Length: 343
Length: 264
Ligand SMILES: Nc1ncnc2c1ncn2[C@@H]1O[C@H](COP(=O)(O)OP(=O)(O)OP(=O)(O)O)[C@@H](O)[C@H]1O
Ligand SMILES: [Mg+2]
Image 1 (cartoon, chains in turn yellow, orange):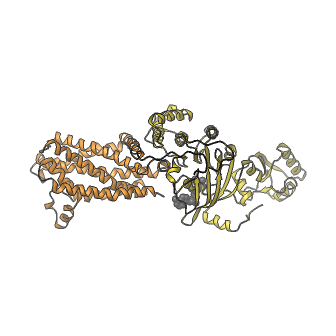
Image 2 (tube, rainbow over the protein chains, first blue to last red):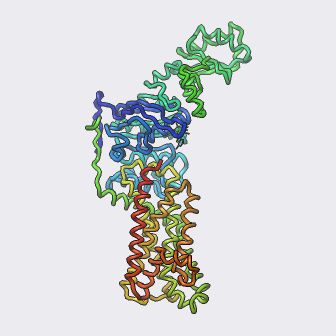
Image 3 (cartoon, protein in one colour):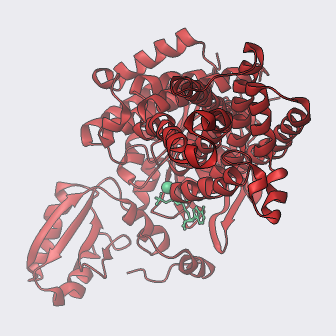
């Protein structure tokens, strides 16, 4: 049985150095260095097209990098690909289950292909079906499953061999809030047993909820790595306050007024016209903002508190929104270094 | 040696066979459940056998009874060769979804993914050959040789199907999508099947076509199956047939496996 010593000072289980992969002109993975400690959850946070799937596919031996190296438990993902496969589990972005087989048959097949013996494969298939709430549908063909059920079966399949390292590419896409919470619990449970998890996500909230470390990916490069708290702090803390003004013409005055509260992190969204600023003291900040705008004679149309998102991280780190854009464009943008469109 | 305390299971050679059986089991389950395959594997060949016997019988031979003696041994090859087009479709289907990523990220043997499929397909041919012999016997076909050559004839047909399945596996793996595989797995089979000694004697073809038909592996194999079933000199065609089967496998197994390993 593969296991991981939970001692803290373990060497990293994943070591990635100078990883590079291009598709034609598109540099999908553009020089990534990364280490992952065993027994932790790492999130790769990035918008569509930032290279998350490409990175995961290289680590799972499905794609050969153009340059650079990646090792899992000291095994090179290119030269020792077969050995790497025996210690990883993957749930890719597209669910990978056989529609014509039943849920149980799918899991047994995966277990057998991980070289569990027949009895053990059956036992674990049963356990996982229970665990993911699929027991009632176990003897039905996967074709008849809902999207969320397929996703859960897919995740179960990646865990059937209890591999020490599991990769999950956007695991909660297509799950309803309850299943999402359930999955986060599963992931935490696995980590308590010593499994290392590497997952990708587009949601800061998700990265925050589950991970020990977050790496922010932008156009194939990691632009920031740290704990979820550090990441949230860099865009103004756990809670942000947003204000919609009754009269857009007063935006500049309002911004000027509010700068006294938090000059550095105040941001005016060029597209929506909303003002965003950290609510470091929650209600107190809220009251202060209302007072200040009121005494400046500026009418508020709407306001509220919210949690920071990927967009906030991106605006803070790059000055751009985290949106899908042509990679050629973003490559140009990267050459210039410091972001330009910062408010 | 390793960077952390993860135990890496040792790779064992015997897994190639175990994995092959697991994948074959999966594909057999699929065959049984996919109506498309059921039609391809039962109704269509039986219908064709009846049509050929009763429509062409009178024209090509003296009557249907005489024609089926000529037709059936060739027909065994026809069903496996046409049946092999389904390998291309099935593989392309597997490759077009996310499923192939899962298989390729598992510690299973990579050739086993393909071997399992071709093994399951070969099981399908065994069923088809038995079915056609059964139906053929019901409408008048008789083996004129002993039991052993008759069994050898059936097995040779299945083996030939196994070889052709690797050709269409290669086509399937090279196809970008299921539709392409459907067409590409099928079109080339027509000339290969019809320009042979399968349905009519080669002498009736124009000279240029005769040259092709006489060197067609299908002809070697049909002639061998025919002599095994009905009597006559066996070795002359048998070695050519076995050599072409070996040749096909030697070319297409490595090509397909290599392609599967290097899927982008
Ligand atoms: N096989 C391929 N051929 C050509 N371009 C590709 C290929 N795979 C990925 N790309 C490109 O590489 C870039 C990164 O893609 P990738 O799928 O890794 O992004 P992602 O972060 O996973 O996006 P998403 O959130 O949409 O899943 C994209 O611009 C994509 O178009
Ligand atoms: Mg992706």
